Length: 132
Image 1 (spheres, helix red, strand yellow):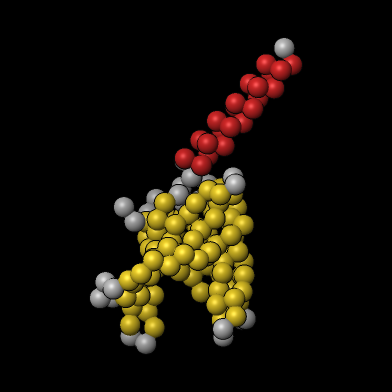
Image 2 (cartoon, one colour):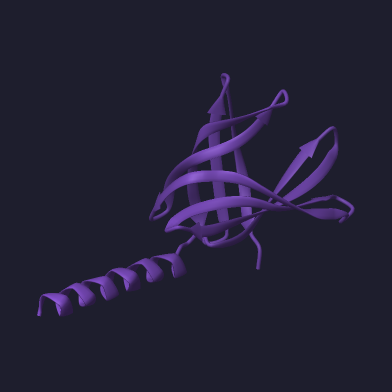
């Protein structure tokens, strides 16, 4: 009987883990627009579940003319997200070095995500739009 209870508990735990991964409101691909020196660029991000942890990667970068290339890089790690708010460590490159800064994630609606962070006395927020 103990074995049956253990197996039942394991099945329930696996089911909850899978349900959480499938119903994750951040799952999928998102795009952000950036402008520097009057030139726009677009970056595609993808949230993935890896080892039961939510992680976000940069997957594609293109210019305003549509020319782009695949680009795989860690964007946000250690994501904790519940409801419509969460936190994570956002990867930033600054003066040739890579840094991890705390970021706040806010899901404004099902298709709009705001990433806010502050580093070196400078605060910024980015708006990401869900790709269909």
